[in-house]
Image 1 (cartoon, rainbow, N blue to C red):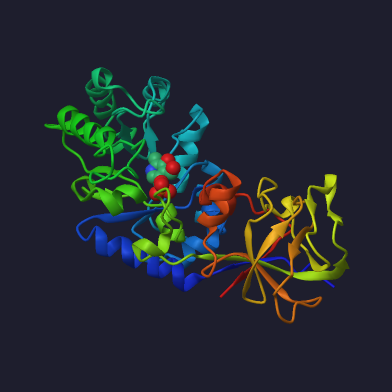
Image 2 (image 1 turned 90 degrees about the vertical axis):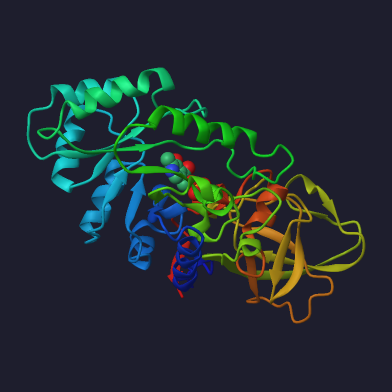
Length: 364
Ligand SMILES: Cc1ncc(COP(=O)(O)O)c(C=O)c1O
C-alpha cells in the first residue's frame, strides 16, 4: 500500500484568495508570487489555478523556464535578478523580465549585444538593506539602464520590498519602518517615469497607500497569514493546503510508559497511543513539541513524544473511533498552518515550503 501521506491543494481557495487580493487592491495589477515551487504548493499547479493573475514572480530562472514549458503565457518576473551574462539570453528567449538590483547586473547589461529588449524592474533599497540600489545610487542606475533602451533594455519599472509591512499603521509601533520606506520610495522616484510596485501580501492587506500599479502577493494567495498572531482566515483568506495522513498503529500503553525517541513524554495513565505516518522526512517540523495540535478523525488531539523521520505519535485519549486507518490532519482549513508554525518556532511559509517529494500531491 502507498504511504497515506498527502498534501491536498485547494484550487478554489487559491482562486478565492486572488479575488480577495483584487478586492483589496482594486486599482492594481496582481503579480502572483510563485517562487519556491509556489510556496510548496506546486509551481505549475498554482500558475494554472491562478490563470487570472496578471503576471507571475519567481526567484529562479529555472522556474521561469518551467512556467513557459507549462504553457503559461503571462508576464513572468525574475524577482532575484539574473546572475551571469548568459542569463540575459535566457531571459530574452523566454520573454521574461528581470529585477535589476546591483551594479554587477548593470555592467552585464552594458556588455550585452543588442537584441530582444528585456523589461527591467529597477529595485530601490528603501530601508530593508537586502537587495537594491540605495537612494544615492538609484537615479544613476536608472540613467544607465534607460541609456540601454531599446536595444538591450525594454520598459524600466520601479520597485522596492518591505521589511516589516506586517506591522500595520495601527499597530504598536505605528508601522514606522514601512512608513519610512514608502517615503523614501516616493522621494527618490518622484519625477522618474515608469510603473511602480511596492506591496507584498502584508502591504496589500495593511498599506493601501502602497498599492500603486502592481502588487506582488505571495503568502496571501496561499491563505497563509502574513501577520504574526493572526491566521489567514482573519483576513478572509482560505488555506490552500491540507496536509494529512492516517494512523498506521494504535497501541495501548500503560501509565508511566515513555513514548518515542529519548522517551520525552510519559503516559500519565493507561492510554491509547496512535502512530501516524508522517514525520520530518515528509516536511513536518521536528521542532513541533508535545502538545502541538493535530486532528484525528476531525477531533482535536496532540502530538506526544518526539516527531521522528517517518512517524509521529499522537494522544488518542477521548478520541472516539481512533483505529488504524483513521485520518490525521496536520494542517488545513480546520487547523491553520500558522498554529503549528507558532509552536514550532517558525512561520507558515516555511512549513508549506518544506513538504518533501515523497508526499503525494492531490488537488481538490
Ligand atoms: C520581491 C518580493 N516581492 C514579493 C514577495 C511576496 O511576499 P509575501 O509572500 O509576503 O506576499 C516576495 C517574497 O518574499 C519578494 O521577495
